[in-house]
Length: 316
Image (tube, rainbow, N blue to C red; front, top):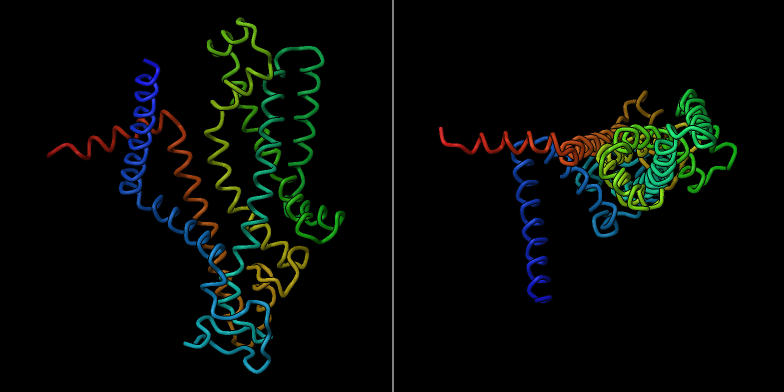
């Protein structure tokens, strides 16, 4: 009997997985921009993983003989003022940009979401918990009052110019966003009947948050996560552009734009334009993925989209 039940459960999970994949592919066919976003993100990830196999030259090896050569079959995107191949550097750049963006965003999401869940859960309870929640929210207001870019520069200046400092700065400036998102979700969920039933059954506050509140509050967090990865890549590039981020000659899109910016005046546009295009396309791709996750993670919008897809399948 146990084997039959286990087999049935396994088939149910497999059928649910297959249905989810079919629904995802149907959504991507119906929303081509979503498919474009996933393609861009996948391409960036492939470049980051297989950069040594794709890049024709070493990204940090200068060749003064070939300085500022225009795009050609030998150098697809030309070379910069030191003779480094721009295409090879663009291919290698996602390695550093994705590492910083993913690490900083994940840290901010985990820390901010957990603090937001605690704040939302205890905010309306009165007493010390309510006072502490109010204090945390006022601190978040103070942090978000500062311009993000200026605040990130200040943090890097305080802790030193290193990858760890850049990751910490990105995590610090992003954490209030997840704190507020999770808090608003928890305030809407904490009075649901299933939460009250768990409380009455004797479950601890931590168990209620981990098993019921946080899992049911993740839809906006997941959507924001994808958008924030693209935004963090942009912030990393901005810090590198002003000299507070990744130090040259490490291949990074922002530092590449900064290195080639002065050559635009004399007509050599390719050292800055090609890294700028790569940066813009990557941020756009993550924004599209974030929009698709927001639709797919929200039950109401997912049902509405499923209804639209069924209407399209009906014969005329």
